[in-house]
Image (cartoon, rainbow, N blue to C red):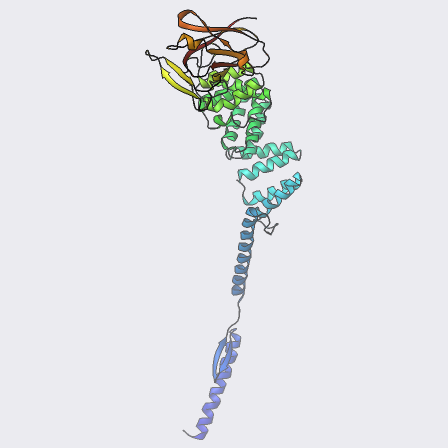
Length: 429
């Protein structure tokens, strides 16, 4: 190829290169030259920028959501409020405003939380309580109507409709709400308040008793616990509920504390009723006169037989030849000791105390005595006298100075005796 032809070809290549560059510019592409080779230069298109921005927004939302959830569980965690899904932050701040008794501010925060959790019955119930506290009764009524339809686990909702039921005299509806609350309550104060709100009314006591009798709920056992702070009249209301519910629901162990409190408060008829419903019926004044139900290790209630737990008194449960139960006593102490006692529900008057002592010698029976007084005092004891049908009896007078005197048996040193069929009869004033 000649020099002229070579120059022509180079010029032609340069023109094609400039033309390609102009074409690339017109097509929106740029090029870089590397050792004589034209390469395209990358640029960010609008779609790429939008994608990057979307990822950034997603990351920020995820971070905000994460801190929001942490804020609900950890009140000290900083969180963002004012964005569409600030549930945790709103709940967190509502706790502080609630503590400050800012009920209107708390309502606003709970309303924000509902935007993220519109069917959260606990938040709805809390909102209703704040609206009530703020005096917004109409709003509260509508709010509680919503939470009531979402389930029974929010205690505040159950309390609201319990009170409404009492207000309109619908105690059957009220007791259903009480039942729902009591099944989940773990605080005896709240439990007592719910029971007491119904037991203030005869219809409420009847409705509670009917519910307990029909369903035997677990909270019925707690019904007789944690009652130390209750006034005597509230204890009497509970005794009435137990009477209405009937026997077979509570055991002696369940009602031990209630019976003791009733006796101490002077509610003797109520104490006797609770004992009858929970410990079985015994004819007459003495409970378990033949020791068929006695617990030698620990009495079931304060109206059951008590025996001493000491090394110089030996007590055994035994039976007669015909199978009738009795107790055997042996005293090895150098002094006369109380061997058996029971608090009984009697007022002032004269009483006849009788018992049988099968297999016990007459000499030993002369060394056994019985007292009926408030302090279980040996000085008030009297020996028994033979009575019909092989029994022994003592006639004594009680002055009524305490609500439940102690019937006590005493035995002299180094003696062995049996006792069964203990009865107390009122002879008059």
